[in-house]
Length: 180
Image (cartoon, rainbow, N blue to C red; front, side):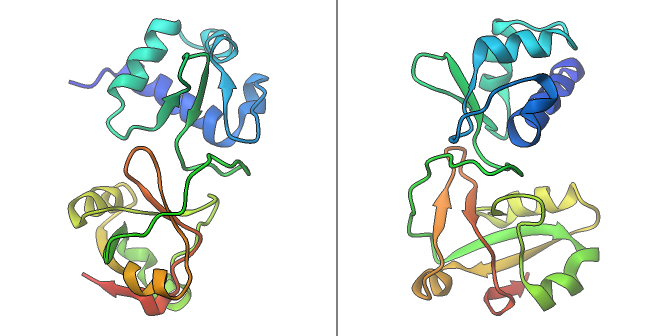
């Protein structure tokens, strides 16, 4: 059973590591890394928090949002940033199809403009329709688009694969989308 206290702390970590490190006085380098000791000290001002709690959150986060560096002195969010960082992802050839879950209320805009990163650096795509449906359900009545990743890649669109299995691309033009 999920621990509501850890969920609240994880949301706070996500806010700091993806969007507003300055809100806690954290320095983030160009690759999204923040010193673990500084993060622990900053979060401990708001929550009962220590290194052990941080390691537990990173290890048990279902979405694999966070990564440590090799010696566990630095931490970053794997993707989902709204601030310009380079999380050092290599361009990867995608599978033929990827999936994007969203709410039905966004369908008209998506079918007109395609998928846009909105307030993030990339559009997030799922490797399977089930995951996409779960993502879409977080935003309202869910629906899933199939992305013709093979055709996009052939047309020169660059895809990246985050360490937690989320596919990333700058945009998905509408001609590469089909409703499931």
